[in-house]
Length: 91
Image (tube, rainbow, N blue to C red; front, side, top):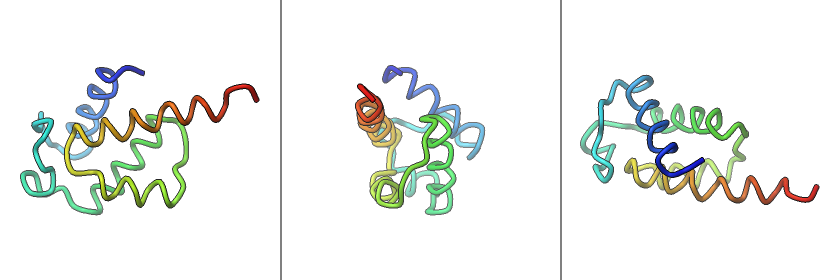
């Protein structure tokens, strides 16, 4: 999945699940859009669906600290994808 595909999917999630239209890529979602911890948990569920994995508790805790901007979310997803591919390689 490319960065552009990730961004499109994340923006779709924000529009469909949170009714937030086109937040700026570096806007603080909590300050500008009132995105709270419950929203972040719902977003993590959507990220799990996107990645087709179940995130462990440590990974979710890490994500909770990083879910502040669209760019941060996309960075997080992008970082997670290679580890998913490597984990299944050669097995």
